[in-house]
Amino acid sequence: MMARVVLHLPEQYHDTFRAKKHLALYPRIEAAVLARGGVVAIAGRPPALFSGKVLPADGDLHIVENGRAIGAGWLNATLAYLEGYWHLDPAGVLAESSNRDKVFDPAQVDGAVAQKYFDSLQQRFAAARRSRYGQAREVAEVPQGCIAVFLQGPAPQRRKHAYASYTAMLRAVAMGADGRPVVVKAHPLKPEMGAAQIAEVRAMGFDLIETGANVHDILARAAVTVSVNSAAALEGFLHATPAILFGQADFQQFCATVLHPDDFPAALAAALTTPPDYARAIYWYFGQHCLHLDAPDFDAQLWSRFAAMGFDADRLGLRQ
Image 1 (tube, rainbow, N blue to C red):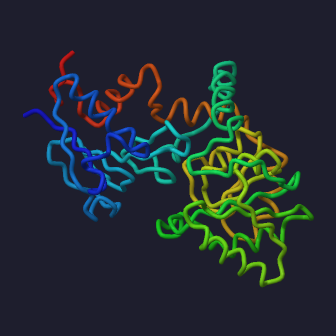
Image 2 (cartoon, rainbow, N blue to C red):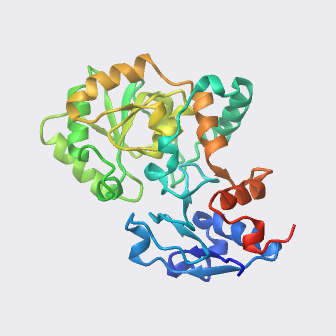
Image 3 (spheres, rainbow, N blue to C red):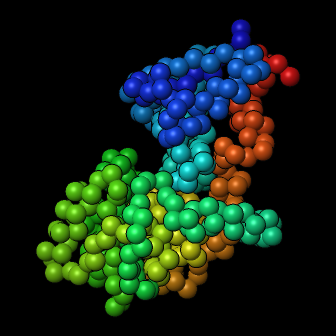
């Protein structure tokens, strides 16, 4: 029996997902499958798809937006930090994607190819001051050589990715800044939450500079970024700015990681003295381990990922 491709999307977007920028992967999948005679169905996202437990197979290939679905015939997808780049992964998305278990060996990455790729992304995002969420258009003053801390909202703690609370992270950074100014940006979607956390640490007697500046203005002036596992860490690579993480990430291969707040000074020293090869890291992550909607071989990559799950063209009923 021919298998279907089932797209599990938020119910409020079932009729409109083809026009939604943040769901741009799904109409591409739908169009590719339908063009070859396959069948696509749209379904909801019941709680079981976020349990992280192994789900039963039913003969179809399921793709869950921002899911935690594991099992034969289950893939998870979501935007992978930079616009146009996506996870399509059997392990999960973002910090839980299978990228976290891959070994990054810069010697195995073609330097010239990586540099060309890096330069392209640098122009597209850093030079254009473009990020996933809306950013200030005016250029803001940011202290040169600062430590830039990016807050993220409740998701890292809810998903148990964080190794410390935001207030503990901010306190550790302020205590270990070694004279560098500490600039803090709240998540654009959670400004009140971020402001409250900044105020809490200021009340402890620590000097924090709160900013709403464009993320790229901050990154261009920062000596290092600090976050649980923010996209800003990877965006910082486009500015040759190293990153420190206070949590699990699927790009931790390139970053210093703090398991306990007391470890921050050592992580800061490591980040500043042993930065990654930014071009090779960016190409390895986005060019080799994410789906890019504008890639000339997008369809081929899609079929390859489906086949790796046991759903080749024959099983999906796809014409050659």
